Image (cartoon, rainbow, N blue to C red; front, side):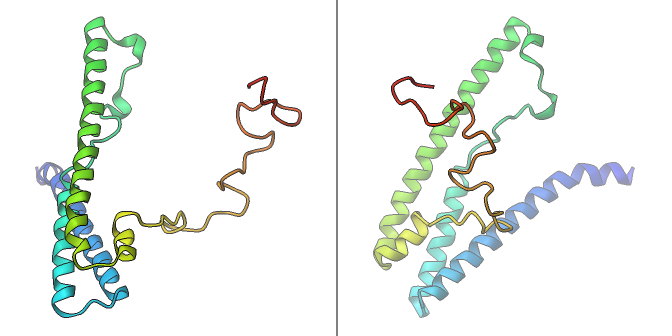
Length: 172
């Protein structure tokens, strides 16, 4: 019985831990930015507070999972007509929600841009709103010659004609 009670409480505990972890990462990033920019005193306190509010507001508008069905999804041929129509309607609704979330995140960015612009330089604002993404930052180095822009497996770009260059007039 204890096992089932633990299983029932585990997902909510995991979600809480993920939220705590996200908050810790956001606070760490804010602290690093404040350190890099040499913010002190009230300017530092204001920045950290505003940045925490900004990240929390952004999280309210994060996107839903890409495929809610997961591994239990039926093949298209297994749906009844009604199920297929409902599946399509649900997909349209999910996509509409993604668009609404993206718009809301944009509005949050604009709102906080105005707040941060009062005390930060344009270069500092770039670090918040348009940071340079480092592909190696998430756990490792890219292997030379692999997964780099313009590097394709033997035979060239998938779908491209073989045997030399591309005939720009002939298409693919």
